[in-house]
Image 1 (cartoon, helix red, strand yellow):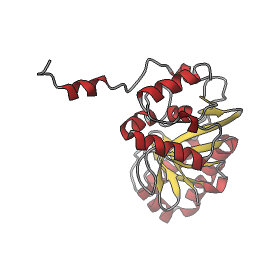
Image 2 (tube, one colour; image 1 turned 180 degrees about the vertical axis):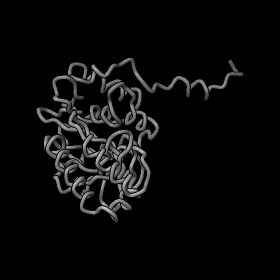
Image 3 (cartoon, helix red, strand yellow; image 1 turned 90 degrees about the vertical axis):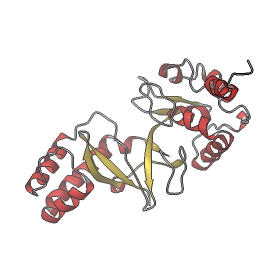
Amino acid sequence: MSDLDMEFIRKAMRVTSFNLSAKDFESLKYKKEIQHLFNMNFFPKFDMSTLLNQVNKNKMNKVISDLRKENATNFANLYQYNLKGLGPGEVMLYFILNNAYLGGGSSAGLDLVVGSKGYEVKAVDYSPQGYVNNFKVGGTFSLADIIRGVQELKKKSGLGTGAEVNSGELKKIQEKFPNELKNFYDRYADVTYRNYFKNHEIIFLSNKRGGGYQLGDVIDVIKVKKEQIQFERITSGTIKPRVLLK
C-alpha cells in the first residue's frame, strides 16, 4: 500500500454527480434528500439553516458566496450540474431555495417554480455597459420572417449570403438601410416581449467571472420591459438578444 498515490485515489473518489434524473427535481418529493446529498458530498461545512424560502437577489448572492468560499470547485460543479434538459444554475437554485422545484410539464415551460410563482432562468454574460447577453429566448413562437428580412438586408448591403449576421455586419447594414433595419429591431422587441418576456420574471445568472460578478452570481431578477430588449445578432438559426439593465 505504501507505493500507492493516495492523493490520486482521494481525487478519484470525490463525488461530482449522483444517480439522479431531471424528473427528481420537478417536485418537492425528494427535496430534503437531494439537498442533503449536495450538503454531505459538496459542502459538508455549510450551514443548511441559511438556505432561503424566497427569491431575493442579495440574500441569494450571500448564500452563493458562502458556498463558493467553502469549495469553489464543488460550487462550479453544482452550478454546471449536468442533467438532460436543465440549464446552468438551475440545480444550484433548486438547492439554495427550500420551496423551489424545477420546471416540468405542469409548469407551463418555466424553469423554476418557487412557492406558487414561476421564473425563467438564464445563464448570461454581463457587460459593464449595463446589459446582459449571450442567451436565447425560449418559447415556440416564430422569428423566421424577421431573420429572413435581416438576412436579405445583409445581402443587399454586399455582405454576402451567410445565414449568420454579427454585430459588425448589423452596423454596416444600418448605415445603408437604417429605417428598414429599425423596423426589424422594433418587430423583434415587440414579438419577444409579447410572447416571452412579459409573462414572467427572469433570474439572470452570471455564466462567467467578469463585470464585478463571479460564476453563478445573481445579476438581476426582473420582468423585462419592451424598451429593454435589443436585437444583438443572428446565430445558429435564431436571434440572440441583449437586455439592458440600466
